[in-house]
Length: 366
Ligand code: HEM
Image (cartoon, rainbow, N blue to C red; front, side):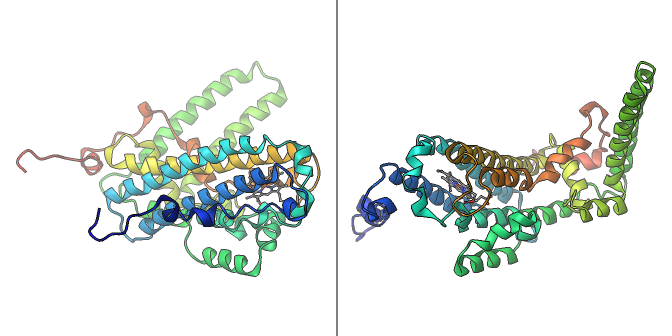
């Protein structure tokens, strides 16, 4: 114990008298307490506490990522923060089961007392979305209206303030653009990769052509169209104009440079220096996937508890929530990078000098 330090008391340290004094059911206030309203309040409060912790971890990762140069050891810290978010998300997902112990009839006892309060007004949830990279402009129009439309002016100002700073997505893009390994003047990695891909495409084409004789005219057309589409997708990797068209039509978001460097990390993830960047990309995909899973799971719960009734915030209820789950994935470009992966055996062999820059060396004389 530090000298002269007053003994700390558990309840004071955690400010439990404040924390445990904040469960005030509306039904009790109205004179007829519904048993399950306490559960409803506590489950929401616990979510908000975990949202606070998620924001704490995200802010720390953002602060590191904001630096113009990031040291290798700091990347491990970023990944540790992201991994903690993933573990919290697992709790958030299973917590819905506790909520679901409340039946639709029990919910009906106090639901109308809550109108027009709604999860739409969770300003921390909005902050998490924005910090992940889901800005107002990236949402569907119906969603955009609900996004800040139900918030108080103070909360809306807070979200708008957060929208002005860089999200994890923006910072990831800048960091990926800075990754140096493919800029070796002695070795044109992408030219070699293109040759490897063309070889694979040719093999696919040969298989399809061989099978064409056994197919009907419609099936033939479908197969050739699919092959064409795959070839075009690969071409878009290197064709700046095509890439820009995809960005303009909102089919792609990451810059071409960031996309290519992200792909390089995924292809050569086994090289020691690329392993931590690979883990960070993977963690971000896990977080994105976990949020999407939570959205679907929450939509199912809303369906189960409300049927097809509208939500207390005025949306179409579970229909709206399903739509939001479908459209609000942020790191789609990272998921799509798997399209461009090729088997390890077909990967271009990296020259010794490049391999050296991707490895750690321990010199005996030092
Ligand atoms: C009885 C349980 C619940 C039901 C029936 C329910 C239902 C709904 C509905 C219908 C909406 C759409 C907005 C509206 O019209 O009100 C919504 C939104 C939302 N709810 Fe819940 N909810 C429940 C529990 C929870 C819990 C425990 C959380 C945790 C914080 C939560 C967080 C949210 C969030 C963040 C939104 C906004 C989602 C978005 O805009 O994409 N809900 N909820």
